[in-house]
Length: 160
Ligand code: MG
Image 1: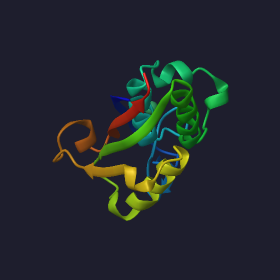
Image 2: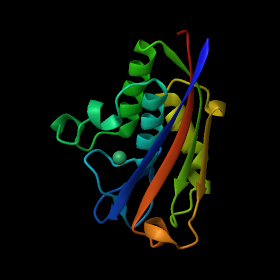
Image 3: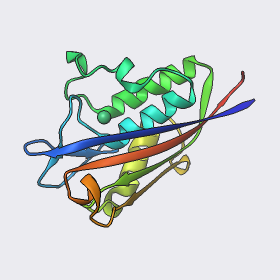
Image 4: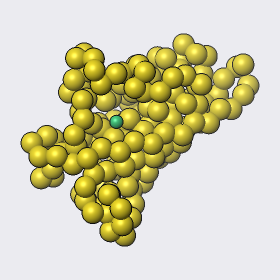
């Protein structure tokens, strides 16, 4: 058995008139994130870390933002599809760890629901999905409240 790790990063800008969806959970906030899908920056970073660990192409390759099929879709569907792709590549998910980088809103009240939603989409135990959030002490785009960034690391196990 071989262990493979992958890293994922994503960032989306705040915009008016869209719901804020993070880790598949819709959060009450005056602004949402701009993007072709539901712009779930956390799910996108997790998806890319899984694809990277499996040695596959990036998220934009499988879910192009020019494809009308992915307009406004829940990114939990993207995670489900990514799990199928990495399973087909002969990999099993060990664990996923992710960090949201944002000034607001507060993530703590929603953290458990996000973990549960991401874990369910990936068909893995909630205990193997970690999620934390941090601010950047008002520095940079996240600190100025212009958007949200997310980073994720995934560990896969493969037979080859
Ligand atoms: Mg994205």
